[in-house]
Amino acid sequence: MPITLGPILNHLPAWLLVLFRITGIFVIGPVFGSRVIPMRIKALLAFGLSLCVYPMLLDPSRPSAQWVGQFVLPHPAADLSQLSLFSIGATVFMELMVGAVIGFGAILPIIGMQIGGRIASQQVGLGLAELFAPNVEESGILSQAMFMLAIMIFLILGGHRVMMQTLLATFDRVPLGGLNFQGSIVDLMVALLGSMFELALRVAAPLLCLIFLQTIALGFIARTVPQMNILTIGFPLRILIGMSILIASVSVLDDVFITQMRKALAMIASIFGA
View: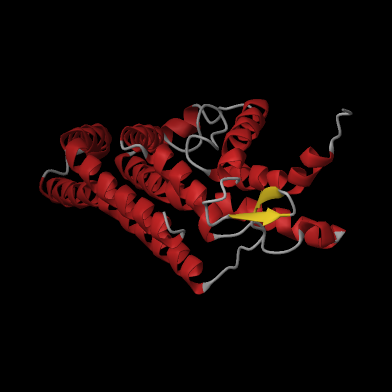
């Protein structure tokens, strides 16, 4: 009996859309979209995951499956064989956006922690380190520390598993090539952006308040004791106070970030029916 590629070719268009949907997380998602991971590794991981996910979609009991002749295929939003060159590009882009929306929503709280660290770094005075070593790191010392802390908490909470579970749920909720930018998705992005800036302010607010009080105190000292060089003791004292506050508030920052991250992941999962 001759071996033909017909059965494989029938699955090829739907599998490619599954591959592009998974690739969206590797574009912008936390951990998966990190620049530390080489592009070849990302492509290999997306390819391997698509080979694992696609057979699950062929289960006839799943809402995403349908019979096409004698084959079970994932239910598409349109006939993939009738797509033109332009519509194929648009369909691929929309599939990338499904994974990108999930990854973008999950990374926003982490960016909020990074922005809070950036604000704190500027107020403490550690931003001057960039003047002496501008090629080392442009985002600031505290910003990188907050980013690494957020990534660690994200992995401990199992955020990467929640992202993948949400992505798998989209195949039952959103047909292949059938993503529509409804008001719910736009509202989700607006709410997550607002929570990102709220998290950044909550991270930097204690430090900003105490640095403000320290600046007022040094101003009174400068007026009452003009012989004292405030600039000599001002910067070291600000760094000492700022680092002490950050060390003392690490547990509080963890609780704030965990609350915001769980809220963000729950919102993303609810939109896509996970």
